[in-house]
Amino acid sequence: MTMHEAPGGPTSSALYDVATDAFRRWRAGDESALDDLVRVMSPVLWHVVRACGLDREASEDVVQTTWVALVKSADSVRDPQAITRWLCTGARREAWRVSKLATRTRPVEDDVLDARMPVQTSPEAEVVTNDESSLLWQALGRLPERCQKLLRIVAWEPRPDYTAVAAGLQMPVGSIGPTRRRCLDKLRVELGGAS
Figure (cartoon, rainbow, N blue to C red):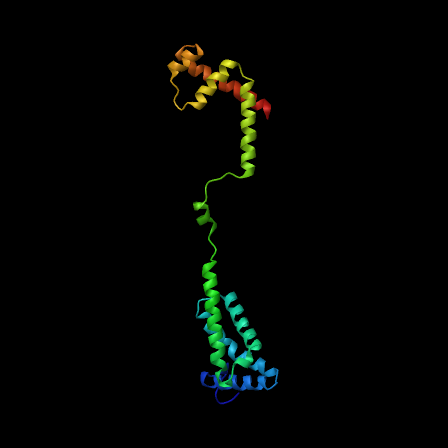
């Protein structure tokens, strides 16, 4: 450890010197110098990227992308003393790019989508409903004709006019309620036998 280094690594004043030296050695052919540069600069890049508001996983990707960019275009860094600025600027730009993409493709929660989607039944629910309707109509068809007519009228009219119903079915107004109850009981028996 040199005079400028803190126990956890170089101080900010020495950081640039250590990074510059490691970069020079790497460009001169010392492959282990790249490891030194990564060790010194990765924490700095990490802070630069996290300051852009990225989560941990995205930050790791951006830092890695920055290192890959350096390996691919190290010759574009003309002055070795500019390596820290080059890395920080590259990391910041990549973080901004990733951040913009993340805001464009931010997932929407299911409950938000559900509130905006038209109400639809599932294919399974439609099959069950169709089966139940089919069984109901078959059971209704096995009832006496008078019950069929009365139950159809009562089912389709929200508030049927009992005087008109009585006239149409040729029965007293007072017997519509009890007759309807008996017809519904017969329908229940038919439905019970169908299941």
